[in-house]
Image: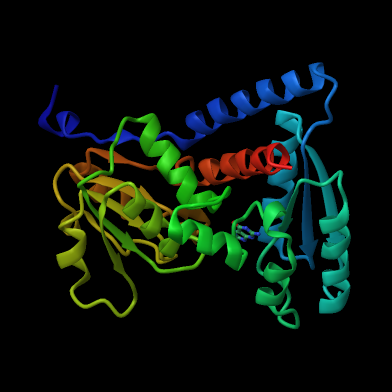
Length: 287
Ligand code: GUN
């Protein structure tokens, strides 16, 4: 074996792990139906015609179909008013046949996202964006954790990577990924640093990471010179560069240093989708 080959990082195969998670969900739902119970139901709302959102919604519906979850897709026009959207959400909140509600973001500019997030019943909030669920994550209680951070932990678990006592560096502080990721790593007894666009000497922090999670949306922000030998690298980025999908980490140079690394695509993305299904099943079970 060449020296290069010996240092190859193990790929954290989110696609394969997500298939396993989906197969488990499918088996659970088949058992429910055998018992004469109804399957879980996820309502997905898309407002407008954002092409990326259309693809995300289509994939979510397909994931539901694959596992036996009923999906209810509601496509509303770009011109839908905030009050109209809120009344659709209220209808779904009151509908006993609906377990989970997801409003695809981003919403058109004239709709205030926060109002919409707060309108979803916390018990049906499978994204875990509602302030009640965010508070529950912060204190370590509650049902749902947001899909991407939760999917990342599932992926680490699958490869036997423990967090306890490790230096965990999260680059990015979004409400969807960075902040909840940091809290979930803290709950696993990681020593957590959050870096962001105003962080000075980013590489001084990233070089210290045993587990590095990067979620900035900036292609190539992290290169191999910025990471510790043997680090676990989780790349949440999904950037189109010259038509190619790439992460926030320069893959060849990071892979050469890492012990484990997620590919883009095929790493974090499929795990996010799988956790949405897990959260829908949890919402159903908790009713
Ligand atoms: N848009 C991009 N990511 C997400 C997500 O995780 N949930 C929702 N609702 N919208 C998104």
